[in-house]
Length: 268
Image (cartoon, rainbow, N blue to C red):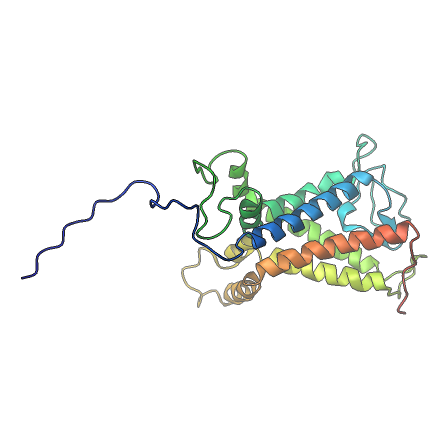
């Protein structure tokens, strides 16, 4: 005769497993590659941001230095610079606005996962215990600042509009005559497409398009926008890396032109 099963007593804490994990694959490879890639970009972008030189080669302006609104900007004749901030700003003009797209990426849901795992080991991988004794989530400083992601999305969208204008100006030649297309023009076109794709694939953008709607049928335009952004959102990780590489490549291209390593090949 069957007897009623005795209720299980819940155990406090983790399972009593002596080893830190039971995985036999190279689980550390992913976090290591991510950390190396992010660290390489941080080192490169920091060097370029503080260099305060070689960021303009007509008609190209580095995306790290745009908009260039300080009086100490290099002379961009008929270029995208306005001395809005006057002469009180003595540091590199890149430091004025670079914090906006940087804040957008730091608070991005994908990048949060990336640097949590790769730099903080929180957790380093699935089924691998993290070394931290306590967990406070994003309720304390500085991680509580990640809740401002939507506001950085607005700021990053403005920067993307400015970079779009910069890309339009690459259709001029070094004498600022329209009708030019160089290799740099194609690179800047690719960069701005990837920047917009990454920006619009953001989770905050997806929520803005379709969040808080009780009926999609009554909002067909927002539903279509939400559907389109959702498709981009599924590729958010790939777009995050692709746009990061394109930004660095665009800046490096301008640097090489400004230092006379080579001339911009003209396509027409």
